[in-house]
Each structure stands twice: as structure tokens, then as C-alpha cells.
Length: 209
Image 1 (cartoon, rainbow, N blue to C red):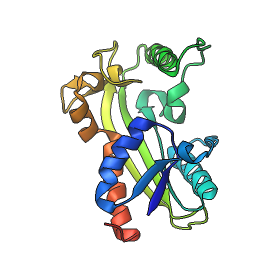
Image 2: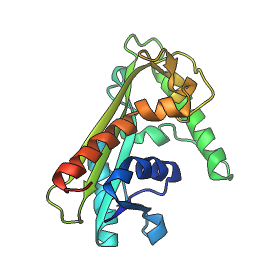
Image 3: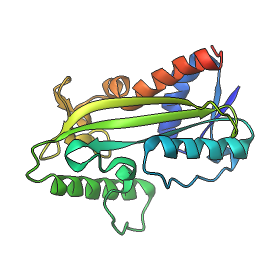
Image 4: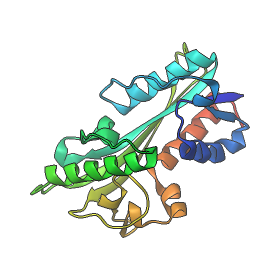
């Protein structure tokens, strides 16, 4: 069975390919099939993930899976939430994607710290929502949600990871996400938790594996 990933993120593809290997799925990106990215206009992760999965499933005429994820901070009413990747509005330099990503990450982190100045509640969590559909008209989407609890520090720590990783301290591990080695991060992360749930759902509802 072919499953189209509604993303062109090669790291995400590699992670999910490994996790879904026991199901015997052929996982491919939508970009490899010439499918454009979908709009993400909604206020919740699950709505955006469903929109992306339905768009990809309709374009490929088969099954698709999508992820929508971000950081939710209690002291900010759940912000940055679905706009986590572009929380700070900045003019990005004309450079390659990696340079642009680093500039956006730095701006996002500065804005987050600015808005949390003096806040007593710095609890936060990374959230990943996966939605899978057998077709664009599938009335029974599979939905899996993974959460990774932490708190926002007052200054960044660590050189690894990306995004908000240097600011999110995981008390259970005694380190920020940016201080974790890749194996530890990938085994504890919100996306890994969501993927494990999705694996079980596909086995049960789609009779795979």
C-alpha cells in the first residue's frame, strides 16, 4: 500500500518510514508526485493536518498522511500554536533555505522570550498531530496526538535541534531539547509519540502489519 506524506520534509519522511516499516507501507512525499502544498488556514493542529491529508489524498487518488505540529505555552494561552514556525514576522534574507530557517528560528525565540518576560507560568509542550486517510472522502480519519511536556527557560541552552529546542527544558531528562542527542530526542519526542499511536491505529483500523 502506498501512503503519501503531505510534506516535503526529508527528515520527517525518514523518521516515519522507519516507524512504519513493520506495516509494509511505501511512504512517498507529495512533492515527488508533483503535488503542491495545501493551505493551512485553521486555528487547530488537527484541522490543519486533516486539510493537508485530504488535499494530498485527493491529488494522488489514494491514501495520505499529514502532520501539523508546534509549541503551546500555557502562559500565552497556547500560543504560538499553529503559527509556531512563523511566530515572528520578519523579512527573510535572500539565501538558501537553511539560512532562512535559522533566521526565522532566532526571531521566533526572541519574540517568545519577550512575550514571556515576567510570566510566572512558563509551562509548555510540543504537540504533534498526525491524520491519515484512505482516500479524500474517507469518513473515518485516523488521528494521533503526541505531547512532550516542558517549560520555557529565560535563555537558550544547547546547540542541537532547531526551532524552539534551546528554550524548552524537559524536567524528566534534566536538559533542554537542544541538549539531547538525536537518538534520545527522537525516542521521546511528540512526533515519535504520535507516530507510535498512528502505527497502532493503522494496524487495528486498516488491518496492516
